[in-house]
Length: 252
Image (cartoon, rainbow, N blue to C red; front, side):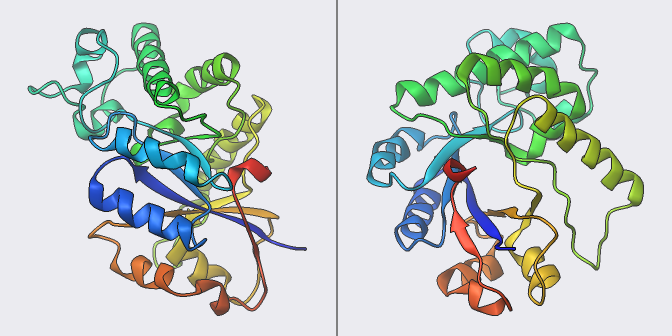
């Protein structure tokens, strides 16, 4: 079985340094996909470069944890997850009760984020999120509504491959499996495995995973990703005992 691998760069648009690192990696064909932060301070500059790379997929990095919301109404309707400066307050979304009013407010905010990218000329191919907030199970109805409204039919699953030194519990993996199955049941096309580049190499260098499509998350330009940066600087696929095919989300 040929393993097809999507190498996705998160956080496009967050800064000039990150933009440059991601586009350089796309140009060298070591990154095949990227997701854009609609409320990142450099997203407009990133959007101007997107048309240069038609083979790459560009998605939406849905955000509820950093920077100011895009929707004007969010300063009131999402007050519980904003800080005193009016910015998203880190992991507050995981600490509050998510009822119907909150779901509606998140839907409006995520619609505003998607529409901002569309106005910038980007046609999103897939959905994922900053700090994985889209994998909060209560937000599945929001994802379903976004898929119907914008016809974005591809999405990132919840991480299901972990470092052997810090394995996930059986219960956690079971919960993630239910979430991932729900995404597919809703009509999203997805990879079968999602993890980080370094973890994939530790787990699957000698033999491929039991899935035909893998998504690997990367963060080019991040000061916290020195080893990943080293791997992306060379041909990391040579470490594998098999030859994968690198694809974008467009190929799903």
